[in-house]
Length: 336
Image 1 (cartoon, one colour):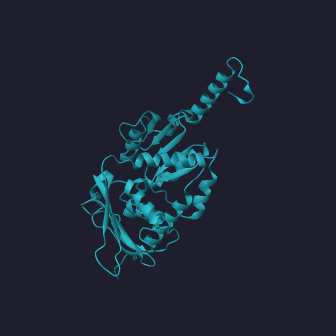
Image 2 (tube, rainbow, N blue to C red; image 1 turned 135 degrees about the vertical axis):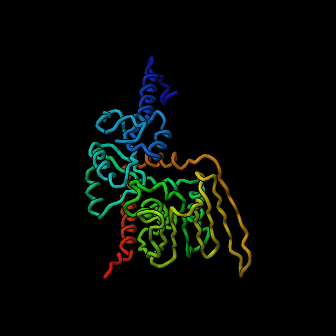
Image 3 (cartoon, helix red, strand yellow; image 1 turned 45 degrees about the vertical axis):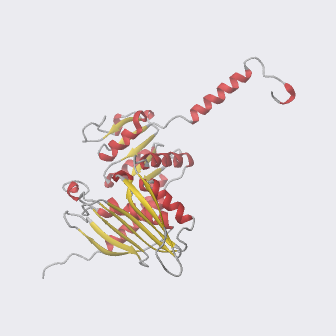
C-alpha cells in the first residue's frame, strides 16, 4: 500500500508499471552489430553474435553478405566490429565515428603519431568511441593473475617474463600480414598490452634484443625488454608448439601462468617464498573448456560504449612501443 493509504486509481498503477517495464526493455535492448571484415576473426565474431549480427561486409571473402558498407542501411545496426587489415582500420573507424557508431576494433590499432590519434578522436559524433579488443585480458586465469598481483601475492614485484608464440608463419606467406612490423603487430601488441595492464607499467621504454625474419618477408621473431630489463618479452610465429607463458617474481613469491583456454586449457601456479630458503609450497589452479574471453571482451566493449570510455591512451602506448623497437633495428648493409 502506498503512503497515506491511497490506492492507485483504476488501471493507474498498471500503466505506470507498463511504462516502467517498457523503459527497462528499451534500456536493455540488445546492441545490433555490423561486422566488417569476414576473415577468421570476423567469422568468429559473427558466430558469437548470432542474430545480433545484422550483416557482414567484406570486399572479397566468400560468405560475406555484402561487398561494401554502403550496401547496409545505417539504421540497421548500432555498432560495428572491425576485423580488417591494419592499414585499413583508421579510415573505417573515422567513417563510423562520424556517423555516431561505436567500433570494436580487432587489435591492434596503430598510430604513426599522437596527432593522428587526437584527430581521430575529434571525429566522433554522438558519444561514439572505438575500443581495441585485447581479449587475452579476459582469459579466466589471466584475470586471476591480475587479482593476485593487485592483492600483493608476490610482495613487491621484481621482474617478469611474457612469452607468446605459435607456428603460423606459413599462413602469413603472400598475405597482408607479410608486411609492416610483422610479429610485433600480431603478437607483440598482446604482450605489450598485458605487460602494462598486469604490472601497471604504462610509461616504459623498451630495449630491442632481437627482431628478424626467419621464414617470411617480415619480422616473425622478436625478443625485447623494458629499458630497465625487469620485464622480458619473447614472441614469434616460428615456435611450432603453441606457447603462452607469464612469470612474475616478487619479494614474497612468484606466479606462473601456462597456456590459454583456446589451446585446450591453462594452469596458474602460485609459489610462496620460504625464509631463509627452501622449496616454496605451490598452489595450482587450472581451467579447461570454452574460450569465454571473446564474449567477455564484447561485454567490456558495451560497458565502455555506455560509459563513453575509449582506449586511445593504450593504443598510443602500444603504437609508440612498437615504433621504438623497429627504430632500433640495424640499418640494412650495403655493398661497397
